[in-house]
Image (cartoon, rainbow, N blue to C red):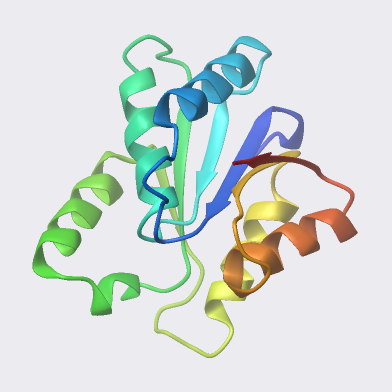
Length: 155
């Protein structure tokens, strides 16, 4: 794996998106970043925001063939608690990713936080959909602050 931090963006966000979430604004952010030279996107493959980012970036690949989607998977059985429909969608996304990085063979305590640190450590910008000061997204944003990464918080 060869990631150029200066051209890499990671995403983090809640599993549940508010009804007024603006997908077009997110797409605009991606377009701006791509037009400014960012070409690699790290996605933690969780439900909700991560899934939406993966889908939007997949759409953008038709216009920007050079961008690369990297699925960062905390453990091989990440989808173990997903519904059947979610599992099907997850498998489709994994198979269409340009690269898949699996951090652990099995679920272990702390593997989600390990994935979140990996996202931050291997990017220069973090796009975050943060609405509450608790949970994995909050942890990831705070970790990015400690690492002095640029953070774009969407509302």
